[in-house]
Amino acid sequence: MSVLRPLDKLPGLNMATILLVGVEDALLQQLADSMLKEDCASEMRVHLAKSLPLPSNVNRPRIDLVVFVINLHSKYSLQNVEKSLCHLDAGFFLGKVCFLATGAGQDSHCSIHRNTVRKLAHTYRSPLLFCDLEVDGFRASMAQRLVRMLQICAGHVPGVSALNLLSLLRSPESPPLEEL
Amino acid sequence: MEQQAEDPPGAASSDPGGAGGPPQVAGAREARSEDHMALLFRLRAQTKQQLLEYKSMIDANEEKTPEQIIQEKQIEAKVEDLQNEIEEVKIALEMKSLALSRMQLSAALKNDLEKINTGNSVLMDTMKEVLKLNKSVMKLQQESWELEEKLLDVRKKRFQLKQASESKLLEIQTEKKKQKEELASMENSDKIKTMKQSLQREIQIATVIQHVFQNLILGSKVNWAADPALKETVLELEKDLTMT
Image (cartoon, rainbow over all chains, first blue to last red; front, side, top):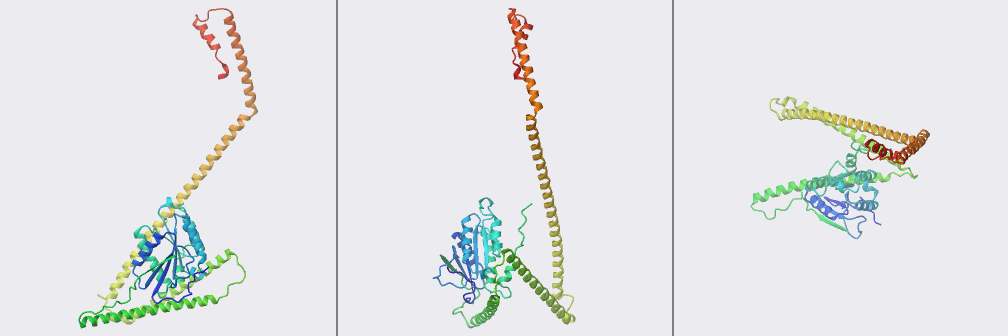
């Protein structure tokens, strides 16, 4: 079982790599396209994967940020993500992992409750982002955010490290009050 | 399975490639060298940051992990403590650098104070702009604070109403239960039973009397259908008393 480690390779010069893990190929592809359209000072590589572990025969650069895309409409995507989380080295969870929950807009189709995903993100101490990837505008702004996060995680922004960003993005510890 | 997608480097200068006359070439070469310099500076900053990250990872890995198995709750508490520590150190650093930059600014101002023309200098404009922005920031903060207060009040009221309705519903429930119990107990009490029994007896006696009168009238062979009063009496006697 190959475990993905964050710092086992040297970083490529001026290169930042992001790995999107999720079951829905169409959504991942759209998100990847939006990200590639964004302005990025360094060379950006987007890898897509259905689940971890990744095949070990491919020669890939050091992965700087892993984004797990969970579709709130399907329980299978959550199970897939949970299974893939075992194949990540613990060093990744110091700011190089992010959870992205999509589909929260249509409440009637949601089979996973928001709190489930929140608890998952809280257990792994990683930031959780909500975005409706089907809508172009939201997807573009989310792509911008991810590109910025990727730059920080790849070490291209002087003075800010992935761990620094993680403590900035920390959500309040107590579960949010449901509307009284 | 895995797919890759690449994005061509944005900031790397592109070769103008056989551009026109000499001035253009010189200008392009200058721009290229500037771009090269910018790129080199950027790469230097990047490499420094990445080196810092690797070094900190090495330092972190040198820490020995505790051998005994600690409860998950304790680990979580420890993690939170460490996170709070990091926050405090960050805040202290921010405060110190803020104080430092303020001191530098005031020192620079002091040195240049005589040269500044208070009429129309950029500094005065900047300061006026800063004051204006500060005022609007404070006003907006005040407004947002008030809105939050209102929201909090509304939430409190909603909560109180919910509680009141909860208690009311509970009362209704207990009342209904009491009523049901009373009804059930009443039906089974002895008083009712004796009352029912005596009622039954009276009904039977009245029925017997009815039949006796009926037979009397019939037995006397009187034409009871002719007389309306007598007809009414006979038909009344036919009425079944148990149906009451």
